[in-house]
Image (tube, rainbow, N blue to C red):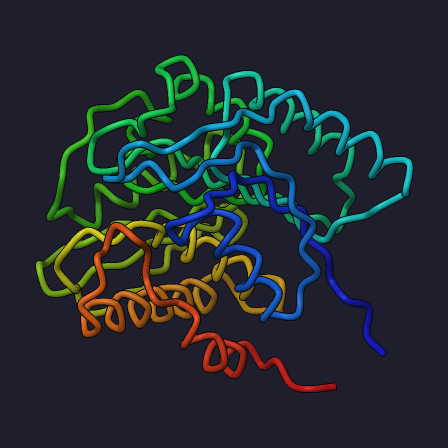
Length: 285
């Protein structure tokens, strides 16, 4: 029997609104990956367009997770960080990477801190400034266009973009340290929306697009990044993993739009998991 791959997912847990751990856990599990969750915060709902949410910062609990898991001798094929609950968590996740990284570990940092030119409500300017430190330790980062501008200390502007601009951004982001970069929210024309990827080892750039569906759908960045990691952990090359992630995320948005569900509540990702498993080559043992 093949050894099951294992990932540590360091994200918040929102009780309502499909995002962060509530999408990373099922997507990666469907991809055959054992997921070990490290909650950075617990919220009654995500913060995007929803008011009255509760917020519990779990910064003080993270070192205990690390200490016990080191004692257990756990090893990880991937370390995947997303939304962080406090400024101190940047250094704690950095310590986590140092403690558990092995030559075979893929470190994916999704610098989840902003979108559409604005910081998320619980993200401070200090956190946004120093997120770069964590990205320097990653093998792969997956920022959106707003987060890319923050990491590079540049002004954000909406598209349409040019290939020269996107590819310049990719190379500058890779110069921070990660060998690979995937940039989301890329568009050259109104009809298509997707992602751009860069591999510094081969100096290759790739793109993945799908027809644009108008509207703002919360949690799709987490769905994309989780699916991207699922593809990479199942042996897909970066360009293929990107396209699978773009197609899956677009399908989730399409189902949500057709159902008329409030887009603030998250997208219907569950119905597409079986098809995703087939695209990843997951078969019953």
